Image (cartoon, rainbow over all chains, first blue to last red; front, side, top):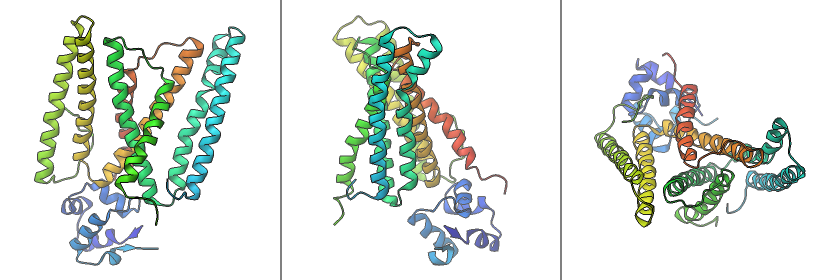
Length: 63
Length: 136
Length: 143
């Protein structure tokens, strides 16, 4: 699934490692979500949305 | 599998064909070896023929996981495969130590694959119960 | 006891840290039990006691595998668990395929006998090998 994770991350000047630590996941997972290789579970998607202060639909694009 | 998806129907059809092929290849191999001794390379080649449908079943499982569009059904199937693996690991562990030290009769390697699928089939029932009944 | 060949999620929560310690203790304890009972078995005369010890050995071996699996899974996040599950399934099918081919070779062409204990051991080793390949394929690379 396409998403704006990389853009949102760059706006805050966070590396993938920074985002991974904030979400309590591995950098591998962050990279897989950003590149669309892996769709996060609902709890993780909600954690991502809460972290960025945005609704899920603003981060993940249902094409 | 409850109400079967097209992918599930294709999976069952392919497995049925592979199972039929397995029976045919086993009889073929037995027939060839009963006719008389073979040179080593031919013997190995003929001996491996019955394992080809087994390898085909592995490919069929991969195809099903790729073709099934219902992610929940895919998840349930993966869970039954995991339970099948785990139970096979358990039984082969127990049985091998019993065979080694308590002289219980051994099990041939080609029975392990059959054992795995029996456990996969058995684990489907508690999984179906755990996740609730079929479609309403 | 386990070899860390992957990066786990960080930081681990307090509950996860306790779970890791718990599984480490279980896996170490079960491994020692396995070794101990195995040693006793070598020196035991045939009979019901030997059968019981063989069952305990098999149980401790399997329980050790489960403890290691739970230790590994407790250190992984959801995506890494998907990769680990995928690795285990690949390893299962590769092992089953190899065991089937080998057993037909043994049965019909006089091949070398494959001891049954090699099957679970091969599955564990194959899981470790496939896991390295799968995790490497999904490695994030440089930032």
